[in-house]
Image (cartoon, rainbow, N blue to C red):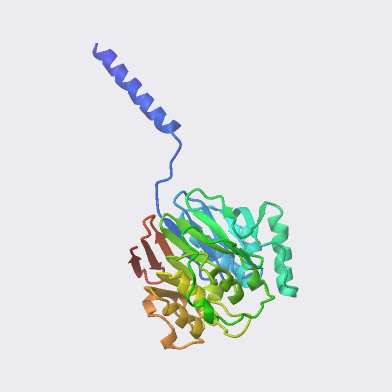
Amino acid sequence: MARNAEMRRKQLLYVWIFSLLATPCIRAAKSLEIYFIDVEGGQSTLVVDPQGESLLIDTGWPDANGRDANRILAAAKAAGIDHIDDLVLTHYHSDHAGGVEQLAARIKIGTFADHGRNMEPTGETSHNYDVYEKIAEQSHHMILKPGDTLPFKGMRVEILTSAGAEIAAPLPGAGQPNPLCPAVPVSLPDPSENSRSVGLLVTYGKFRFIDLGDLTTRGELGLACPRNLVGTVDLYLTTHHGTAHPGTGDSSNAREIVDALHPRVAVMNNGALKGGHPVAWEIVRDSPGLRDLWQLHYAMMSDQKHNVPEQLIANMDTTDDGHYIEAVAEPDGTFTVINSRNQFQKTYKK
């Protein structure tokens, strides 16, 4: 009798062990993670959803001994991923698209997405596009249009702008008249790739993050005037690295869109000697409801008055330290921003 009972216990143990081995491994639930990678005044932003799906926005500069590819791979390692599901190139300037070749040689990229053909006939930009096109055609390739969504399960990614066009109708809950628009001067046209930037909105529960690449004022006003087509956001990546050249076609971060978006927090992906323009800095810093502005670099071309406190800056000088800023978001809209240089962090509740 005792022997039969022992055999029964062993059988049950074997069944339990087999069931564990046969059950697919389920990734533990986690937060949405955003890594603002320091590519020295370009852009590379990695977004990883709670299911481990990954979106990389831009790849930084070429060459420099693979500096930007190394920094992207370091962020990927910190996020616990070994491939990129979707790469979106906002446009083909070297500070956004130059690093594609080096990165693609070192990590698998599932889908390449962009606004379509390059329309800026400069040698450098045309070269960037030619290199990118050869790489993208070897994999799954998408041309993005305003209103498209990317097929992620753990987050919603909506395309707001692409190839000089914007969404035609307001997003759910948006569409309110923008009181700043009656005073808006006519914006000058911008024939560069900047104006064709892919702009997107990432939504995770009640949390919303917007990235408009290097979109310039005419495109920004297309989203904000006469009605706000986007609504409000929680986290705003300053457009064009915090550039503002009022009265020119190359200006970005128009007050009409920044105030309408009403961000709780903004991140400026400037370099030590690029971006961080005092006018843009003031527009963002003074935006109603903004709790904090974080910077990837201390803006050395500006002054102390137009830089945030040191604890909110990832890189303090021109040395290639490559510290990033990370945002960790929860579905209730709460998110925490972390400075990888000093581990200073701050949580923002809805």
